[in-house]
Length: 318
Image 1 (spheres, rainbow, N blue to C red):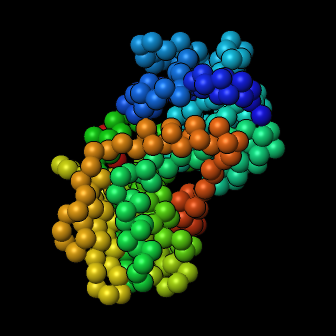
Image 2 (cartoon, rainbow, N blue to C red):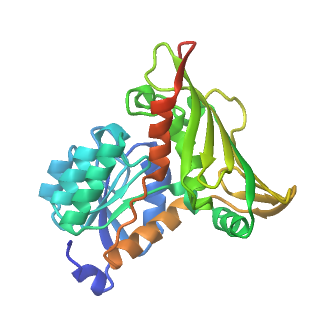
């Protein structure tokens, strides 16, 4: 287990960011700097050098130069996370994994097993679960029998992921990269296992991951679920989950879980504040020597690839 002295004395947890791309700069760094329980002391990137952060070119170099670091947040593309996480865990560091936790379920489970063996805390982070309307929606669902759930998750890849060619490479997941956010909310809203029944994966000829997906699922208790994912929607994005109860009552989460409607009436509209909640959760895990490594959203995506029908789509040109 990493040294507890700093936490016991009330000093902030020293953390490094591995991968300093858009998500790290836009979300992780501001959330960490606003949290007095953390001190961002370093980062790893071959190119990006955010102001005020000591940057190293590799995880190995970071760990040699800064043995005082207690935790790392891995914000790289998923294809390289396993090796980075293994190196950090072997060095006794607590690990925060940006979503998706790894390129495959096997890699994710290997990371979880190593963290358990080494006695460090691991967070497989699903930031959309920390959207403000998710817990109120979960509470509403808990007292009702559900009939159907419809996920509509559509955005413009050119707007949200410019220049990120890894997203269409093997392990990059394509439209499932944002789509897995909806699955992280879904698996928080309901406790039943979700079974993939059918998936149509629209694959551009020059890509190794889908750009559009239509998927049918079913819960263990018989609730039908439809998911429509699209990476080519222009103008405003659609990040919605529509829930219908057997009583005909309806709930809708919009804009990724920042807006909540009950029977067509808006009852909540909040600003996005996911990463501050995520880091508060990570600090609690480290302080109590616990982990949170739920891979159920990744398992649904893996099942979609196993069962999915590949449908030819036009080449993707950014």
